[in-house]
Image (cartoon, rainbow, N blue to C red):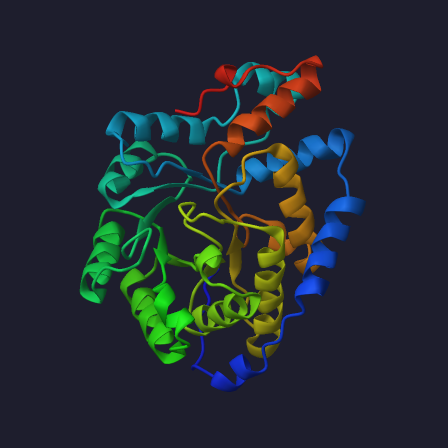
Length: 314
């Protein structure tokens, strides 16, 4: 799925209004009155795995760690658990593997015969303060190395100063540099101050051609939250109504439990429907989430919670 974007329309930004109290009530009511139980919970947790960008973005990453991550991406849960759940016929894989540019080639090689795209973080990740020329060079280099998805981080100061044309031009340049690769724009919502800033930044990124809007780098003090997600999902809906184009949504940072994975899926399903919950339009940015999901699936089979050490990530 590709979002072609549209011309920058500042009038759309002037129309942005966000009722913070209503946002809070909506998200609280959804997680409070919607629950997924029994075999449906198992199905939703398996689906969450398929929507996961399995990620390692640590300063001590090594090729061996990336190889282990890719092996986990190919086989997210243990073979004996797959057999116990009776899902041998399900080709269970994650949505993508996300790494720094330095390890793109490593990941592409490790996944060469698997239908799992490699995503690379770029554009001065995580702060977005590199020169534009350096950001564009990094994007092009990652695409040349085989990355099929590029997660860029916007310059937050454009949002905080209301310089929407500069943000639009920046994201449009990133889009062009991506070529055929999908562009995921990280807003860094925890740094943007207000829901209105989050909504406006989402609008500008979509108009500039972002294929996904993403909450956070995972490095901010406040990362993905359900209220911020609701604001972004409403922008996605309104953007589609005005342009006819859909884009995807990716929450990232702080999502580490199976219960959270269910809450996020409920929110997306309730707001945008079944299609928006599929991997083409919804991803989790996560590293530790898979461990807890695997523990919950094992509990489903055995009635006992295993230690996290039984489900090593990489």
